[in-house]
Amino acid sequence: MSTPLVPSASDKGPASILVIEDDPIQRLAVVGILQRGGHRVLWAVDGEQGLEMARQSKPDLIVCDVVMPGMNGYQLVTTLRLEAGLSEVPVIMLTSMGERAQVRVGMTSGADDYLTKPLNAGELRESVTALLSRRKARREEIVGEIKDKFLAALEGQKQSLANLYEQRLFKELNSRWDDSGRYNEALEYPDSIVLAVDLFSAILAKQAASEDLAAAVRQGYQNARDTLYLFGARHLVPQGDSLLAVFVPVPDADYAAFRVRALRGALALVKAGTGDSGMTVALHTGPATLVHVTDPLHGDAGSVLTGDTAPAAMALQQFARDSKWRVACSAPLLEGLARQVVTGRNAPLSAGTATLAGVEVLSLA
Image (tube, rainbow, N blue to C red; front, side, top):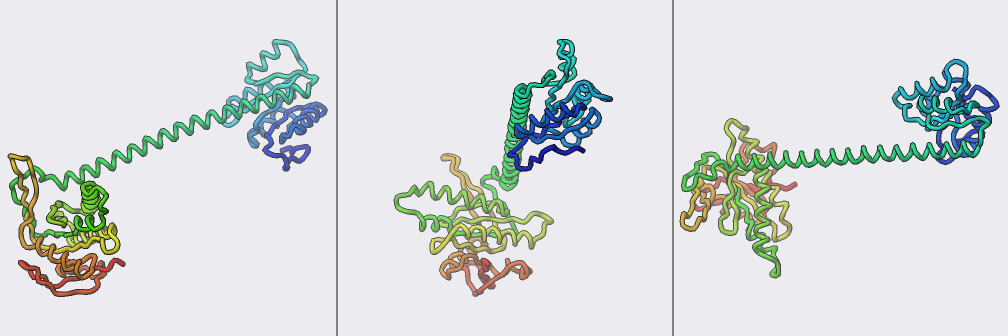
């Protein structure tokens, strides 16, 4: 491959121009004009060499003589227009033949401009500037079109993923509320986990007198609801200043993993509270019965947890709060989980209708 006649490494952002000319005097003149214009110039002595150099260097513009031995300028341009990566390269054709028919042949073959010899330096510079500017504008237009299409596709994919997430969340929530229409019926769960959190009292402790209490309670409930549902809670039952969540194991599922997931939900809840106003969470395992009740006259509906497990969980939650524990659970809940759960202090506790064999406080570390 030929090299530039004058080094141009110091040129700032030069265009790469390939000159194909078999006449050494004409070639020297064209190369000199282009280099003085700040361009990086390569040169070839005939059409075959010029085509090979164009394939290797991918120039920004080509200046090509028409009459050359072997492959002439028309044949070269026709070949370039059929090759990927070179079909858009602008070509200026040079010839000593000024007849209109020759100009038409040059343009028909795919040339972008046609200059006659003897060459005028000003005309060559103007033609090069115009063609390079036009190519730059076209490239920017193509990049803009690609960018717009990319952003549109990205937005479409983003919306599609958002819709998919919403559909899956909606399906998940529906699967947990598939019994929501069974009012005035009892749902019995022999192996449930009941989680008790002093949600509403924690919200009241943080609430300023000037703030909207109803909005704060509603937002706090929604945040707790989303967290508990994501960790597998089946039902939520407000009771006094506390919120009870019922976790129900899936048939044939790993029971240890089910208990760990409920514990992770408890740990996630306490991260929302800080300082003395933070929430306290307690968990106990055992049978629970959920009764949906409704008032046909006023349309009010609600749920009631019956049995010993819910009162025990609430008593444990009160004990944990008095003891400055953030998360506590009954010893039966931790059986077989020594390698998965880190515990701290323990204490005996009589919870009214149920006596817990032991109480463990979970480490948040």
